[in-house]
Image 1 (cartoon, rainbow, N blue to C red):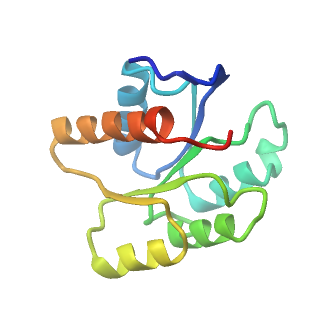
Image 2 (image 1 turned 120 degrees about the vertical axis):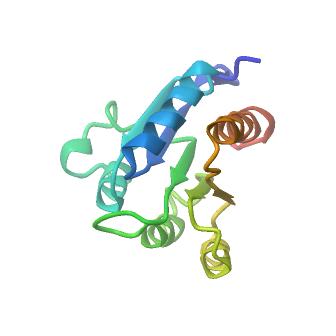
Length: 151
């Protein structure tokens, strides 16, 4: 199933991930399964907010389109992922964007805090390559193929 377009519209994912290996794995898996037409990757919380608020190098909307989905790591340099989540969910123009926490932390306090701040999902990155690839595949199909959105 090719879900590179839903309702005829190109899909955009913002990947906020500071680990280059994890980012590359997400990008390759999504591209292999044609899960999105465009994946924008930023490597810290400050860049994520600049992208979403179109500041600095992201001021051109053509280079920073509003994402249909945000994959957000928690442990980020400059601005922590939890702070990014809080900022997004308190902003009317951004709060409807589904945010999936994609992290190595299985700590219950992190999970509770993420949901308290309106994360739409919380996924722990598997260490096993095949399991990680399957998780990304399933995630893409669920959020961008099967789940109904107001876009």
